[in-house]
Length: 185
Image 1: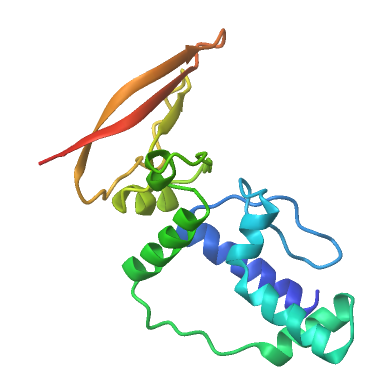
Image 2: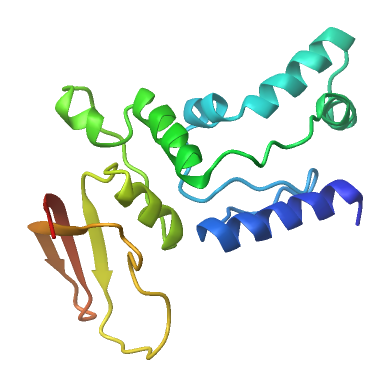
């Protein structure tokens, strides 16, 4: 296994640990994978500043292809700045999402709302704390596992939810849709 494939695997593991994201299938040619739930190419390009740097370097050199992309990635790689506080990082991401119509800003501005779906618990917690979730959907399965993560554990403020829809399935599962109401103490 080459170093770049190990890097991609380590990066996926760290993002999964920190944000509890899920991944689409790993590309066998490159060893990379996209976050599951993010299928909008325009949105991916908007948040992929690194890809733009690599493509610009390839264009400057006049080279294309996977090998040229790897060389350009190495040539343009800068040390990471780990000084940014986590809250600042999430606020910056939220601002970028809002620019693309994702978040509560989309519904109040009259533009078409866009949806994101996550199976994990850490990223939705951060977005909820920033007030960026305008609808929650929970799928309740008729199974008691006796273990697992607690949804929204650590939420900074209590949030009342208003039921806006429900769908029952033959399996006994129920999909419940809620919109946030007011914050309570």
